[in-house]
Image (tube, rainbow over all chains, first blue to last red; front, side, top):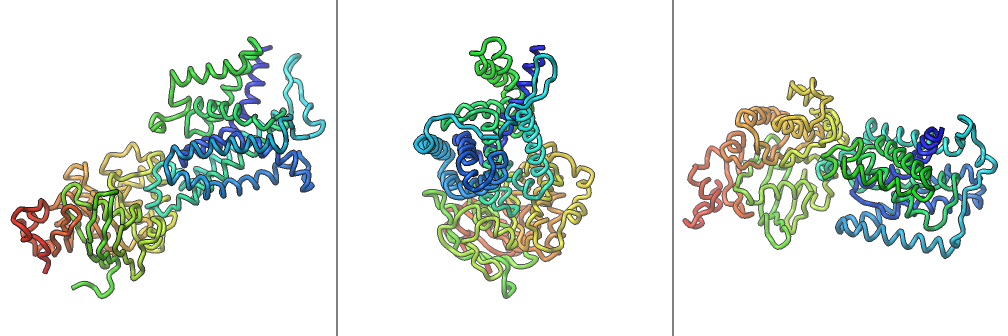
Length: 290
Length: 247
């Protein structure tokens, strides 16, 4: 009974982790940038949905329809300006720049919206659920987020494997110079990858706000879980990220079942065990670790 | 003896790697159907020369004219769409992809012309059967063929080949070089870099020897004596005898 509960809860939260992590994984895979502000972008998307979308007469439930495209554009612009400039210097600069961005965003949000928790208002939908058995309930919101994660990962997978642009993005990720020699404008493709990354993390941020409360500093903790999901699943594998997220979610729920204080601890244990036993991740290739 | 308007004309090209002058005021021309072999020892600046023409390095000074346009300011991807393709040293295939995907990426900005994926499959008849295989499982010679195919499907007017024979067995090298006459016959100008001098000279219509970034010898292969080439290749205390012997 409790086992079913752990599995269901873990899977549902794992879907969210995968949605949150896929953009991080994409940016690392394509431009070798570890975006330390990734989590903060999700939080910003949450604040836009809560505070700005109503001003534009968009109900909070549907805010993702406008926030997600907006973040795609933002991602392209930030990549072509700030991030490209730092990539041109050296990889270490991108770490400093995205870390700085993260600090600036958190403090701006604190200054403007205070440290109070916010959540995306979706009315009575937030508490609706159906019952699996006497003790296990499945929330519609969490199930929708898992569904969105699977859909996003599926579409992304199709885009990367079947479309011309997707193939060339993979080519740039394999060997940037060789892709240039095939006529690829890598800066533009970096922009597209960042647009996808920002769009998916915006969706993740709004989903988070629908499931629970967020504050200006929520990004950091979720970024850690996203890193763990990517590493557990294996760098460069989208479905691996989903499995990694779900494995992390289940480990955390198991920890919470043993003792509520152990929730994050068990997740970290799983992460460390995977790193020790299978450092390329569950679905990663050894060569991808170079 | 040159055609009135060459495809590619390089004038006084100088390239630095930091403090080191890798290419020192090198000039040459490549016309339609020409095969220019650039020979020279390790570190003579051959690869740097090709990479600079492809747009992967910046020239310190000098001009690169392609079909009458100065292209030094073009980014690498624009030079490909203009008609210059480089088969890079070490093959540099997209290792996570299949043979076919490598060719599709090579063709994604292709100009109209004689070469498409089907034409490359004709050139290398073993390819269609293995088009769905990941290239990382291929042998060195097969990977080299894919690299050449990937450059050809862009339909270049000038094809640059950087050390295609490196690390391959003689029989495999021979098979790779067999296709060059077919490529040239379609009107493509070829600029190739070879450490293996005899291999380079066998296919070339003209040859250029680099030593420490300088041009030490230029001419038609049949007009060059092996002694001239030796001096130009290794340098010599015999003095400037080997310098600029070109007719």
